[in-house]
Length: 175
Image (cartoon, rainbow, N blue to C red; front, side):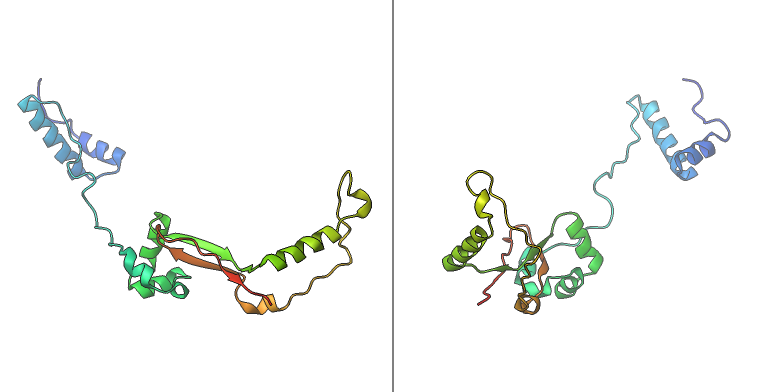
């Protein structure tokens, strides 16, 4: 076994190599010497793994579901509604505790609307190409203007939802 002292400067060089303090290396060296004297297998691993650090902020899903959706459109507004920091909410989104859902507004179509759309599409087919290879007419001189859709609501909206909440489907009746 011989002497159990480290060579002069060895602790300092090992500390520099692993980018830790000299005291950390000395502490590990003392642990290893004590285990060697007892005759057990040398183990200098940390005994605190997984049980150290700041405790995470608790998330109450029920308090988030009680917040109206209009207050859950941005991380900032959700954080102020819950009463916690923006970075905590952002970390929840990154760790998939909360999820972001984006949807676009869709028109509410009844059977008559669907039928009209289908008839319009069928009218746009070239009559000579229907039996073998149906192709559409050129749309170079067709312009569709539906201004009311620009001012009704935002076209796309983001919401922050809990994992058990259903995704939203927004519709709007045009006529």
